[in-house]
Image (cartoon, rainbow, N blue to C red; front, side, top):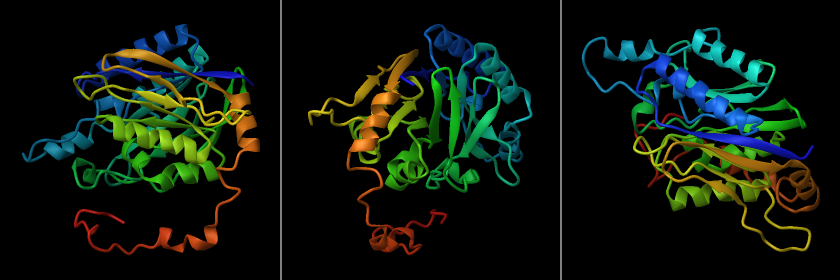
Length: 295
């Protein structure tokens, strides 16, 4: 295995027009395929352009929930067929129909058109409109078959990346690359935080964001390799987009990443889990108590 090309699909959505979002998403996937991509990654909750109910009118929330789709419905099925046609994996995001409230989900579809992983956002933004969602129940890693061979893929979504536990659990489960759909402003601190997730876990990370003016673009990817064989520290940034729409390719050298993970000290070898009990405590103390938080 050598180079894996991952396409960050940086777009603006067509509001809640799912047919238009489907057509635009297909166009960008085909462009990514023409650029040699092995995987195409959508920004967060693409089917409805990361929109929420803004009205208190009777029935408005129910109308918003009705926009959720299941994995057997046309929006998802269409991209499964497209992935098989293009022989390219697609990380598709959508408001997922779920018992009770819907979920903010990403499904990784392999090049054969099969869903190999579905992840729902665990760290929903409960201080805002995402309180209307059902949070996910865990972090998952799958094996993805590509033309270059098999690789281990994990996923987290937007606010998840601001908690080091998200990427850490994915690393512990074997992830080599972490896919991260996004839907918020990416400034230097969030981008630096994302760089740290790659560094501290020896994983490649890739994030696709909405283009301006919906967000501010800056879709970005970082390599896992923070030190070369001589001990020199290369810049781990692989690509950072501007604000406009486009398909941005991040190339990951999997042989190089695996050799690095075999020889270096981060990851799991020197951790001291016996001292980490407080990390799973449900207690929240001042000044961090928030009435809106769901544990």
